[in-house]
Amino acid sequence: MRPDFSVLLLTTLIGAGQGLFLALFTVQLYALAGLLPQPSAHAFYAHGSLVALVVLGGGLIASFFHLGRPERAWRTAAKWRTSWLSREVIVLPAFMGVVLLFGAAHLTGWKPVLVSLPSGLAIDATVALGIVGTVLAFALFVCTAMIYACLPFLREWASPLTVVNYTLLGGASGFALAAAFAAMVAPELTRFLAGWAFVITLLGAASRIASLIRNDRLKPKSTLQTAIGIKHPRIVQKSMGFMGGSFNTREFFHGRPDAVLRSVRWVFLLAAFAVPLTLLAVGWSGAPAGVLVVAFAVQYVGLLAERWFFFAQANHPQNLYYQAVA
Amino acid sequence: MTQLALVIDLNVCVGCHACVTSCKEWNTSGSAGPLADLHPYGKDPTGAFFNRVQTFEVGEYPNTQTVHFPKSCLHCEDPPCVPVCPTGASYKRAEDGIVLVDYDKCIGCKYCSWACPYGAREVDPERKVMTKCTLCVDRIYDQTKPESDRRPACVMACPTSARLFGDIHDPDSEVSRTIRDNAGYQLMPEWGTHPANHYLPRRKTPMHIHEDELARADNPLKVDGLLPKPAKSEPSLDDVMSW
Image (tube, rainbow over the protein chains, first blue to last red):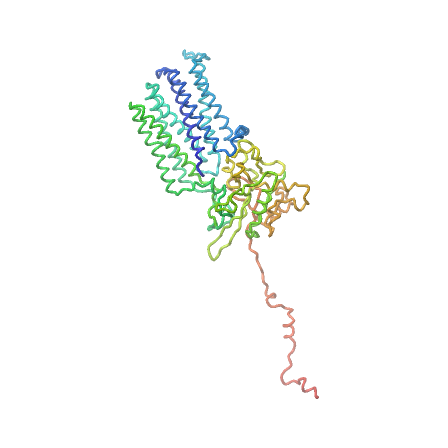
């Protein structure tokens, strides 16, 4: 498949935004339980939510560049019963709305207590919003990943590992962003967030490498024999029927040599995992904030490369019909 | 239930592309608006087509067969492109099984084309919406046309009658009988899409030559040869006749 930059930006940016929100709410839960010092609501939660909204909004804007008719985008909410894309389009704005409310509640200090637990913990409105936001964040990871994982004949994508990867990689970049953000506004949380970013990045590396191994072992189910229905071991295409390009020759081929694919694979393994893991470890041990900012930036670029590879590696069965111009 | 479909006979297709050009001609002049046709005389002509004829070589020289393979939307009975559409622009008609795109609802997200294993859908580069074969839905129900013309443009154009059109759910239709009698098959059955369009395989055309066809029993020349031949000593006509 041809990687479309708008989709690369959409999936990586909203992943980071979801991860950042999950990091903010994790800190709030830990602080609620007394395991972490309570940061300044104004500086950490409200501004953190703003950063998450900016990142999510960037992804949302990028997604419009993928559409041929963006002015009709409102129609996409129609088929949520059958289409994962439709579900994503519903969950993304809903999640952004909850992040906005979460940030606004922290900014204004609007925290009416909803429930008091027997242990004395007060569950206020921001916690309730955080729980709703967490559910939506995970639902959004599932929706985004299932857009790809639900297509059975794109076999590189059709795997539960796709959902795991989207969740872990989004979470990793979001926690790395949270660690860099905390290093600037709430240094007492830096170690906690950098530590979690390290752990999630490590898990993400494991699941992404697992999917690389799985995809290397895939054998194509569709062949030229099933594509044209002729039982003969040697079939060669002599003509695809036209000499200028068409949608079929542009949309489904990345058009780069295999060497590029192989090097992008190494680039993303280094930039999305190896380098950020090192920098996060350095940041965890108390390096200046700049290290964590670089860690997030390098990982984000690495994840763009990872997403590029994710698309480029997927081999669509329609390509069997477009092997030779003439 | 009706399921309209094409049956394409690979045994008679000669790869002339008449179905491609007549499809483009009909569908670019229809009420749905023109199909893009960009730089038709330039270096890189491109555009949207609903139908293509491809050519494959089967076997190894000298035992090769050239197979011309017309390819268009197969109007699957379980179309994977329909449920993924977020707007409902892509749909399958209940009354006749044709898979269609509502060009006014399509947002051009291309997701349905990813979900089609056959590459049967093409984005129109000018209108920016997904387009595909309609089985000439604006033609086959046109009451102003004579009955014999209410068939898809590609079927009308085929000079060798390699394309048949009809209802594959009606067991007595021409297409159903042809599929049964001539081993009609579906493309990529491994994905469970149940394409409505069927293809008929190449067939050997056997020719039996009997002994009596090589030497005819009733050949008049041979019959003459069987008549008794007078011996040299017997009187000839000259002996009888005296001038």
